[in-house]
Amino acid sequence: MQGDEARALLGFPPDSRPTFSQVKAAYRTKVWESHPDLFPAQEKPHAESKFKLISEAYSCLLSGNSLILRKTKEFNKVMVCKLPNGL
Image 1 (tube, rainbow, N blue to C red):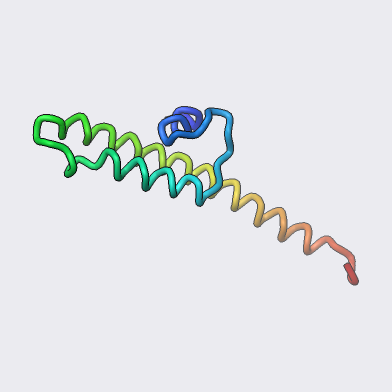
Image 2: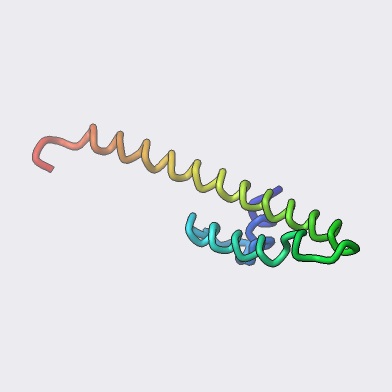
């Protein structure tokens, strides 16, 4: 799943950069709306597939956010190590 597709599935504009807390809140809302246990038996297969797509979108966006956070932490470590004393 691509990032644009995942953002659209969770209700974000395709070119947005949602924060971790925004992704988490959108995921919880969408999961609650599409949880298979809330639907009658004849609608469960459709709800299950939508539920799985939402979960995949959530994990896709989280993997992207964690990569950004890791890179930021690495950058901050390098910058702190290279700063001269007194700054």
